[in-house]
Image 1: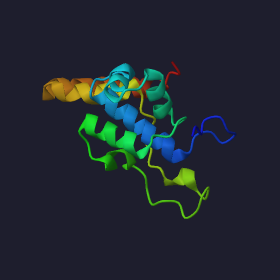
Image 2: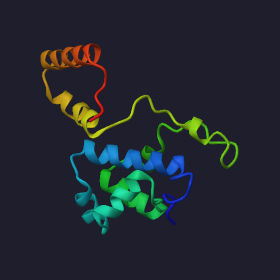
Image 3: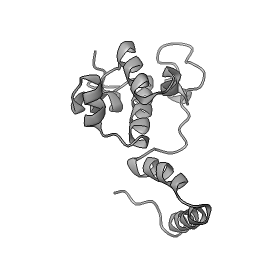
Image 4: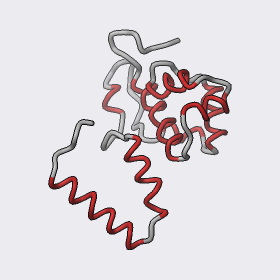
Length: 138
């Protein structure tokens, strides 16, 4: 059942699992259509999973893990101890240092392909850009 239409929006665990699916998909170089075709779904269904608007069934999560060649626990990494009760402190159970975007994921995927010298140059460039200008909102 969809959880995206209510006042509270998607459950934090559904959002977290969807985010992990999105991060892994991008890091492996797949688009939503690629993943959808592999699972017999539309890209719109993948999009809803990734946003947490639709919950991913256990069997579909199993299929996604097999496609990505990861342990199913991968999708739950970053969750701290489970909440003691429904709705109690659910948001505090997540470990998110920064919002992952397509760009940060792609940077982390491409960086190891660079020589050590070029990695250092890229790091210095990113450091300089982050210090001299506040984050853009585009």
